[in-house]
Amino acid sequence: MNRIDRNIAKFWTLHSLALCLVPLTASAQIYKSVDENGVVTFSDVPPAASSGKTSTVVKPNVTNSMPGLSPTIASPEAVMIDESTARSVSIASPLNNATIPMGAGIFDVTAELGAPLAENELLALYLDDELVDSPQVNAVWTLTYVIRGPHTLQVRRLSRAGETISQSEKITVFVLRPSVLRATPR
Image: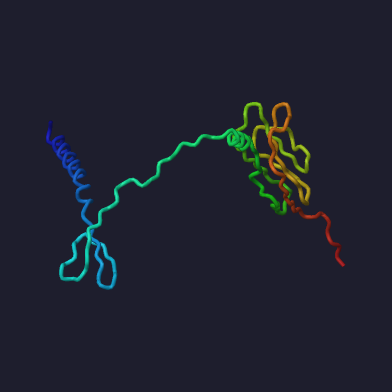
């Protein structure tokens, strides 16, 4: 073993010993003192006997006060609720009663799923109760040139056979578009 290796070994030995001694210094006594006015002070130094303070040694609470966990057994109703929640679908954006600002009426609709689509499932977007494009596995649609005014949106989770598995609540969006009509000058 050369000199550098010995120095490294000494360093790690001293380092380990120092770490072992840290808990001993961290467990000092704590003194609680109350003076004649009722003021409470905590210190690691005992008060002087002539100060007129009453003091006691405070022992830290080292017991685990965390209550134990009791296992819960899921009821069949809870399992059915979880399954229906997992297959749920909702519209994440736009929000209900959102206003699509002036422009060409182009905006994205994003669906949020309770669980990923199964292999035999698709998503369909309905605008004013009319199917927009064909059902797809992607949860994002881009709508273009939507006419101005209020419109309802709904996303449905479908089987490959076209049966509705679940559907989102209908939301309303308001599309603002500039009018082509111009006021005639007077």
